[in-house]
Length: 67
Image 1 (cartoon, rainbow, N blue to C red):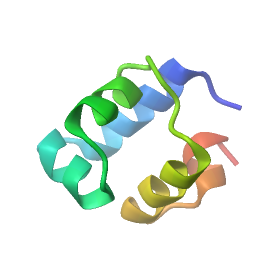
Image 2: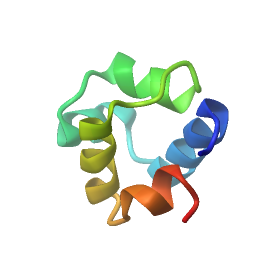
Image 3: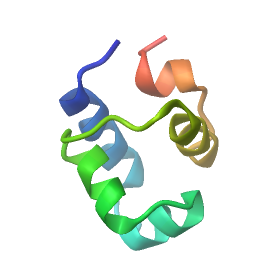
């Protein structure tokens, strides 16, 4: 499994220049929750991992486990 920091870096890279609030609203979480994930403070719960992966058109394994 990737570390929280590695996951955060990957999520920030995927978001690019898209406003964080836009991504947060699209996946149904708060802006602060997204910030916590992107900063490596927290790792999303499994249900949220699925939604984030779907949003970015990836599998959970590819996004969170480098599979």
